Amino acid sequence: MGLPIGTQEFVARIEQLACRPTPKKDTTLRLKIKCVVHQSTVAADYQHELIERYKRVWSGIASGHYFQDLSRAASDARANLICKRLENPGYVEPSPFVPTSVVGSPAPLIKWN
Image (cartoon, rainbow, N blue to C red; front, side, top):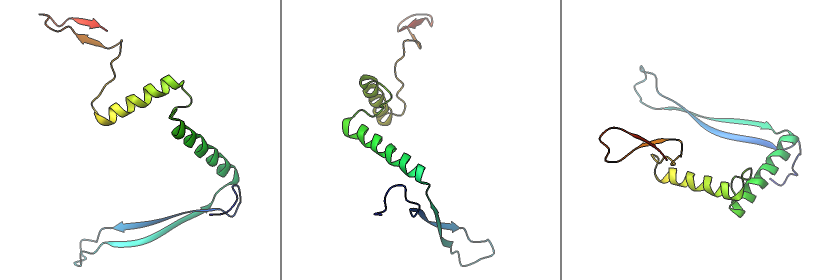
């Protein structure tokens, strides 16, 4: 923290708890746990690309235009579809290309929406 973007002194670090079950011959029934640390410097180019990505993401969040590669209307429609799918995982967006059965017909007729 506090280092300028692009500095070679920036180190990314992950601290992980690694657990392993006890061997069958061990009667203590204790998990084998160790703390593992992964760390590496981060290339200057990647740091700059990442900060630009964060800025784009924040711009989308702040403006509500989440899918900036789409028009605002298409972005809103896609966001609404995702919300509907989260609320109801079985939700399938109606499509004009998917056949639906005609209600009340004696034979399984197909109607294209």
